[in-house]
Length: 160
Image 1 (tube, rainbow, N blue to C red):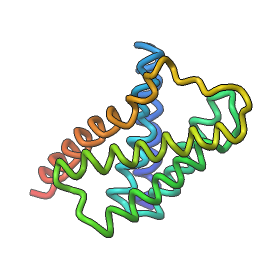
Image 2: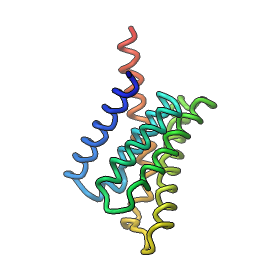
Image 3: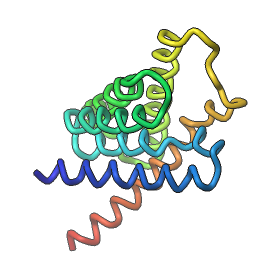
Image 4: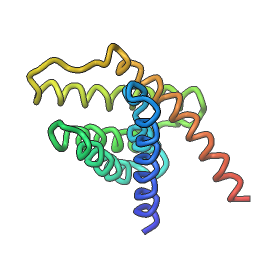
């Protein structure tokens, strides 16, 4: 029951942060994908199965607020959540430099899957947002690293 509560709170937090960012600046949403960060970190912390389930749920939340085909983000986030949990169990990605590279690569994978699926299902050109969308993996890496380091400090304080 605990992973379900954590997952629900993670989705709620990602939704609230995305809504707050939307109020600040819509172009900022092209650079910052809070749902992708949440999926990557949840997979890293909880494991591949929980990461995939949270990725599916986050992707469906994202798709429910978009005008595109329902399920594209769900599929991309599901694969990202699974792979972030799977890879983090096979290799040590916790040192800060590796964590930055890992979250950046997972963010790039998520964006790449989403672009690929969108290109398959949509005939018009892809909206790159003036190139801001290409900064998303780098921002995901920075934000994911900072959030994970904060999580690790809070967890260490509670374990004392």
